[in-house]
Image 1 (cartoon, rainbow, N blue to C red):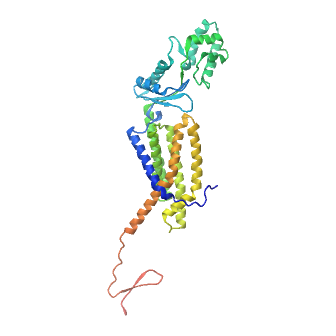
Image 2 (image 1 turned 30 degrees about the vertical axis):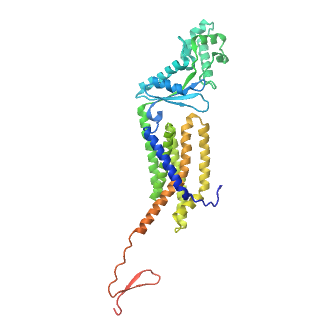
Image 3 (image 1 turned 180 degrees about the horizontal axis):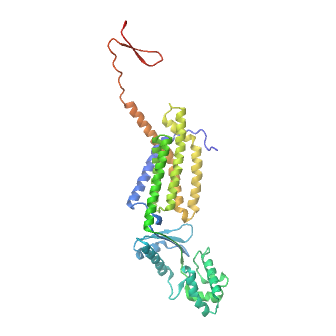
Length: 417
């Protein structure tokens, strides 16, 4: 299937605007990285605790950030999830495991004081464990005339937790009356819950913990993996084509990676393991697109060696235009859907792919191709400017003649010699 046939666009005519745009974005990204002291590494790479809280309504992000800035020894990262999930992620740093555990407890205590307003002697039902609920509820049930055996109590608490954690509540019960839908939750049980529990407007959904040493090692391995991928591709293309083609392809891919990381810094987005996976995916994706164009350039050069290289590059890009548009276009639509509807877990991963596919598609044409053309023109100019060696002088009495069709100088001695 071909979307375009016999096109003859002068792509290299527009190389300068694209190169200037790349330089502007690259410089802006590097300035942002320098001003912020490097990329904003996620918990995976710097070590820390990442907590996800679910609220009964839209989370008050500004208030959360303000109270935690005062409570924690270092400013946390607070990020609101999009899509009406009423969730917020809070990342805290720590020098060791004890500090990270302490930070986790500080966040929970601060939330309780700020948003829950706990009552003396009562337990937060939305953030209590199964055993804590059973221990708190056991005596209250007896006082309210609800006599349950231990297996019955265990089943009742289990069913209430399932109800609490099932969407749309997802951990946040806003009224004890909602629990009347649970089998066995009689009015006496609901009254016992009122007497011994209160309902915080939030629930701790998950806690991810990474030690600082592990985070540093992961960061080192991630950078090493990216550089080794680039080095391996440089060696492959230099062997498959010429070294200048390999260098041009690697520069284009390195350009894609730097711009993507810079855009992450500009938008203050975290780089975690999923983003590294996206960057490695982009390295292969962009390199493949560049190799397809280079392969067509090599074929066209074999067919017509006297054609100008600029015309060969333009013709090669036109011949692969349908393939580029179809593969890049369909991939872009897929990752755009992930970015819009994939949820917070895939947000950074899909954002890196959206940016990288746009940058990687045009870099194959407007970055890699012009580098090869520039080098070729430079070598041509050097060959033309090289001094021409003078022919050796002819000895006296010796005449030079050229044999027809041979192109070789034949020296003859004097007549009669």
